[in-house]
Length: 351
Image 1 (cartoon, rainbow, N blue to C red):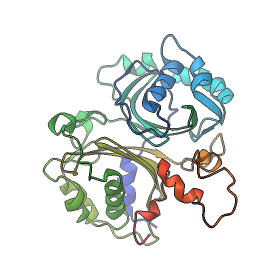
Image 2: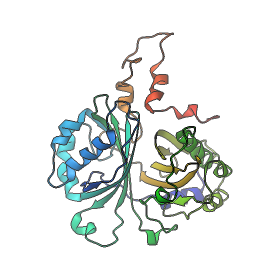
Image 3: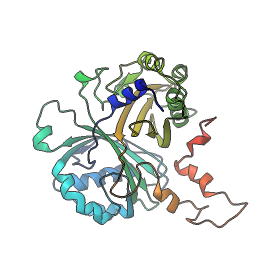
Image 4: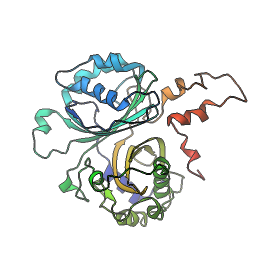
């Protein structure tokens, strides 16, 4: 259902899956400003990771910040706080250092983009070790507890081995284009539409609409800077015959940044987080991505994409977990868009 060139491109982006909790040494995060519950979810997520793996450890963060059933979409972890506690020995033996790069919060969701390191004696002591690129995604409750977790991870590539000369974490335009995004700029919708038109419609003209062609910085190690490499790639492949092959399932916009959680349904199936940064002209100037293969089986029985707590615990005054039939009250499905578990089909026309 997908031609060889496209499959080859995705394979270049994929690396082996890894467990995704490690030690937090410092938190250079950007606090989210639009949490639905008034909490600083970015700070809580960082404290949670820090408590699990910093030295000395503070395992009380599991009881303080996690609420059962604590749904897990990490393929190696089961649901529940007790199962996380039981898995800590293996996790802490393999990972022991993290550098949080950036976070984004919108509604009840927080995305944390980090550089993880493997066992200290193996990797972090080596100069230039690129680490592992990871995005952890958390859903919070109204009382600031973590109820659900997803993640994607990819073995990082150093700048001198990348097609664009950039590492997979730094933000070049944070210094060169620091201005805020205009209030009229719908960064989330623009990012979703761009991704859909590029990879489902193979429409390269969308680059002219949404991307700053003079500045565009790329952190995918297989692609050079600028829009020309993307345009050239699209010219070599054919429109997918079986419908959309990239489906956006969740996204947040926070300041200049947009994070999209995507399901690539080709072979191999992949979980992808694309990160875009916008400039003061509402144009995309920088891009990162993190990619994991989708396993056949998971320890929890949960897939990597669904939001279980969104259905069981919508946290909206106009909805209950089992709403009574009504023709006048708004439906949970419609109202839930306010917490950014968006039905993206409403954004993408013709899908």
